[in-house]
Length: 147
Image 1 (cartoon, rainbow, N blue to C red):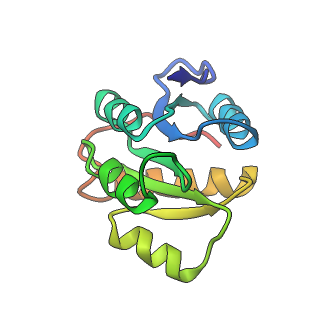
Image 2 (image 1 turned 30 degrees about the horizontal axis):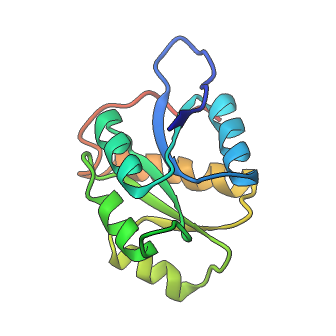
């Protein structure tokens, strides 16, 4: 697992787990993490992501749709079961209302089109953090998300 560097703002960065294996999307998330005070932790398998989400108490987990060895629906369900029940955002080349409904039915939060765009990824992560903090999922205090 590779951890991205968060910007130094004097307070702890918000931990975000990303089951994003390589390429443009991973680089974009590293940049968002640095800029917006997020500590992005990358995982290569669903097990690694689930363990990191539990260990770090991550409120948000991103998961790419095509993770080898596991169906995306199972991955979303597993990742959403981590404590403290993070908001799971699926990344996919195909995004439609049917997929979004399937994500929610499996305990996920949102779906983002790939390749990721900075403004869309930032907005989705920020909204997920806000939702998590303002629901029963967010029973732990987190540092502020900067944007």
